[in-house]
Image (cartoon, rainbow, N blue to C red):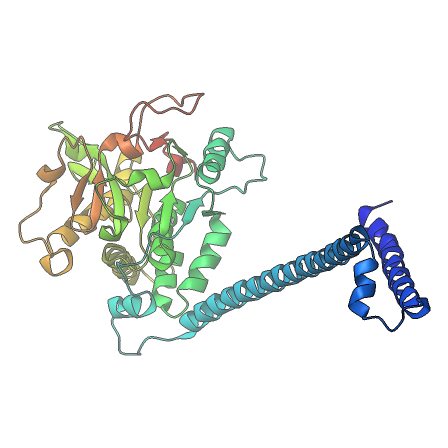
Length: 402
């Protein structure tokens, strides 16, 4: 039998005892020969133990009732505030969705340039935090048996090491759908995306587009996170100071570097962290759109864009069209535009040559090569000896298999 049920049974008995005691007292008063005596005298004749016991009994019952009432009241208040909290969170989510829909419905002025349309749709606010998103792309879905186990492990680690982040994996179809949704007010962006002749070109373009619209981290599927994303920012740098985090990709000392890459020193774009609307992303998107549509306009009516030449020539063309060569040019252009970067000196590749520690230039944190392309073995105990090793890149050249 529960204690609650026992207390409910006990309460009527106690009340009955109290009533009987009161009746006995009254009876004693009325039947006494000295009934004319003062009531106070009669009370004095009642044993002190009885009065004290009765008083304690009444007091205890009052305290119990008050405690039970307060407990019930606290439970009711707690439940009320919990329900209110849930309602507020629901309203906040609905408000966010509504604002997002309003944002997507608004159309830029008809006479706006491409860059003006991009700014209008996704303005840059440097004061916001880095959004907690992780974006990845691959031709196969997670449940597809063709999803390489090496990539599957890395994909799962991105989510596991960064709890609280939204982690999305896009394939060719879903990435296309996402771009049509995010840029439906700028049809030339969608046209350029659909006109790119190779999957690797669309994968490159997609990373810039999703980061520009949503912000967060983009990472190629052939990567493995060694440390959580918040560890990327040094203790002496405030997140508010940053708009983007990138890393060196190649830093060649070979006299034949032109046969291997577009630029002697290049920034990687297989891992990027950015705030939405960043000017570098806006510029590379506009540049790719203009370049792609210009190439398309030169074709005969039945022709389509395509890559030609040897494997190395194709690789260099990809780098110049959408890849790390183009990305490096846009980053360096931003550094040398003092109106945007607030840097009043010429910035060249030599500023980043043989970089060993993170370097803050304007609002861009540039990391050494080994930060996003670490060659260390993945430790079984999870302990990383190199504090600047954040991501392992398998450099699988996956574009050759797409």
